[in-house]
Length: 249
Ligand code: PEP
Image 1 (cartoon, rainbow, N blue to C red):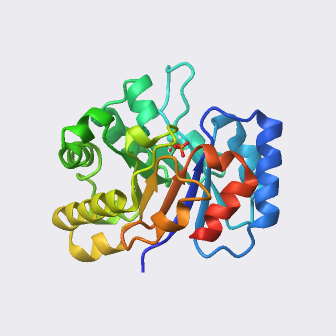
Image 2: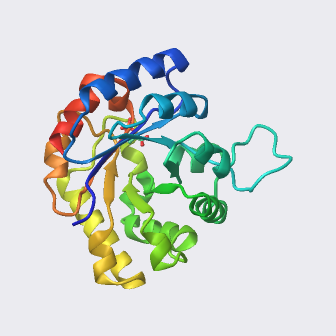
């Protein structure tokens, strides 16, 4: 049985004190979840929050890592540094990183390689923009993203990958993919994984949906057989909402 998961992505929200307060609330409330629970926090929170959540089922993710191992890259944070904080995951390929920081498939392939080499698990995001969806090109877009960054991994390495399908037009817009659109894409992604690896590996792959998923629509999205959980932005910033989404999984 593949892992079900609800992961939060705080993005560039919450100062350290606010982040600690939210993580403390989650620690107190999440004792025996029915799914894996991960929170993606800004770099500056990682060490403190990972320490605070020691022994809790809530795990910690970075929202990015560098595409270089170490050295003269002012302002960057390496995968090894992320790992040293106690974080277990890193979110890579988020559309905001692709769009605002020009992250390419090649750069992401390198980030994934370094993350895995340093013992991090990767939540790898893919998804099409509105114009691509309107042109019916969503399948070819996600296929190219997978082929460009992660389909070269070995079957063993692939075990550390969780996919997150995040249609860009649905992120932070209040427009959610319909449960049918999510299911259709997730089934397609699983088919691609089966072709690239094998059907068993595809069946074991966790595929999250992200894009305006909230406490009201989560249950309906998660009811689809190929939607294994969610990557949650805005609604992960409010404990009550994030907890309701975890309960829906
Ligand atoms: C995200 O950024 O990963 C995301 C899904 O954001 P939101 O839930 O706010 O749409």
